[in-house]
Image (cartoon, rainbow, N blue to C red):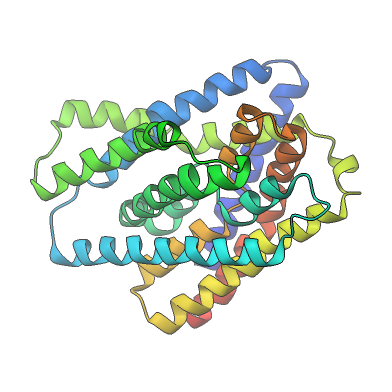
Length: 305
């Protein structure tokens, strides 16, 4: 598994570098990047979620899904406790961004291509459970952390996101044992296969827009990155090992928890007039750093899970 992860990380790194190249050469700008991100979030990822659930019904898969939901819920609870306990509000105007970034993962952009390469369709199926829990937490707890307020209207908008709706549709088709017609499924597969190149090119474009050398001088960047990329995943890994979950479920949850800072954090910072530049720097820095930390964590996981 470790070699598969390294191989996939190298491929993803090359795609990320392509994104940087395209931005530097002005082949795409920030507006184009946002449009690609919308395409990924609104069309590509939801199609992949539905297709991942186009498998034969079995009690084993249902059991794995339930365990994935439970493990994802507990992972987010641990993240809430950890970020609140270790990141103080006093003298820290960016506390909301720090706490959000320390616990919420880019489980869609980065998690899907990684899980798909390591564990295949079954892994992506279990990842949809994690992403559903992520959406619920990020639009409730995450929004309160970022803004200091809770908005039922914004929560409803988050719960009606394409990713959650597509997951529910996929589950409905799964339990009803309804298969999408082959012609339509093949077309959807073509679209879903764009996930990895689109996600990594968007990440590369985001990295290209930041001052990499300047942000390395920010000591707080290292603390948040340490919490997000190593401390929280290490706690999750210990919990997964102690629970003796099925290996596919355990590896899926670990990869999701080990992913870099969620792109949602940057979107929230922009939307709620917080420090958008700092949020985007955290996203860029942890994305690059995760190319090292994820293989390291999976190397350890392979020996204890």
